[in-house]
Image 1 (cartoon, rainbow, N blue to C red):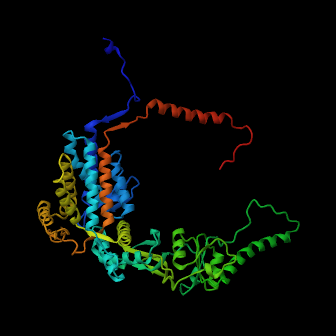
Image 2 (cartoon, one colour):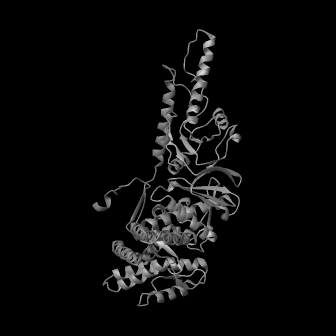
Image 3 (cartoon, helix red, strand yellow):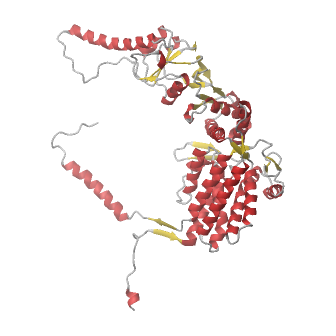
Length: 562
């Protein structure tokens, strides 16, 4: 009787939503699978694109896993993990964002029946971590180094990596053209790690083949004043002056107080203002610079002054463009025009302004330090050019990674099949439940070649059986066989130059396993409610604060109204 009368213990605020146990875990797994289903069809050379338009009405057409994941407004807490791993893969490797989401979801899908049968998630996590370690060791073993090759060989190898990445994008039709462009731009920035040294400028109109690479800097013509037309638009080996000051006639500030006893003195003040600007312009001219760029405005007086002296000037140049010009020409951005010495001036072989589509571009080419490159993209629709830019970003990242880590593996699902075979073989040597879990991990890896087939409209079961047979050959000759997208059969990915940097694959498997283990380790979700009373109190106190403030108005000196 006493037990019945005991009050119920309430730990959490009323209305708190708690879900826990097996059902909670299964629900999280289902949410992750649903997210992966969105990007599933974008994988590979025959992948479809997604059209996403948000509440602001802007439309994005993309094939890039990370872009799609960012634009999907996912609210499910467990599924958000997949968005994070797609972002991390994008910043780390550049490509493989769809792969990483698919793998994570597939690992969870394979774990689901075990969870439902009552297996403890920690056992699964332990086995998955072991399998991940073994898989990564195997990738390192299978990777082929491109170190020690001549520059020409290296270039063609890097172009192969870029081609593999671009083949699954919208611009896949022109992949050889763009791959060469990407490799040239990455090699031109050398060991400089900053990605913003490669500028990508978009000009609507023309076709993709009209895109070109500038070994230097190109940027859109800035806003210009009268007198601009008289300036020369082409120089050979000019000196370039970079400024971060305004070259405009500035009247004295309004709050300056000057007392005059004689009206004629007023003229001397006006003259002084004019002298200041003329002095600045004179110093620019005396420096011997033929091209003057400034981040701030260059006014009409300055434009005319420079035009009379055959000097080209551009004001309001974007910060990043100015930094790139500084890096390329060897100049330094100045914040004053006093004491301009030759060391701070940049130079390049050719400076010219030319028409690209319906825009005019200022182009600096043949730069001495050559640590920058600019890709000018052409194409029909704006969305198309946007997507081309995202695709090139992926390719640039991949080439940088391959150049740094210089080991590549076979793509087209070949490496996934080989690891899958290796793990199945390894699982047979393990006694106990782990054998089943590692087997399921191995099966999950097959999602990549299977999805490549599905997206291309081939019979996935048939192709996978052929691949399994090839990879199971004892001689190991089938290790680099993957899906052949063109014929619907299988082919040696390595011989067909379908390559990807090993670091990208390693990162993808690592991130996907981590995400799967993270979701499996969660057994309870607690959602705190914002209780209505608390919201009501907050609103009331805010109103009180405003009202209270009003009562004291009129005492002392008020603030200036803006």
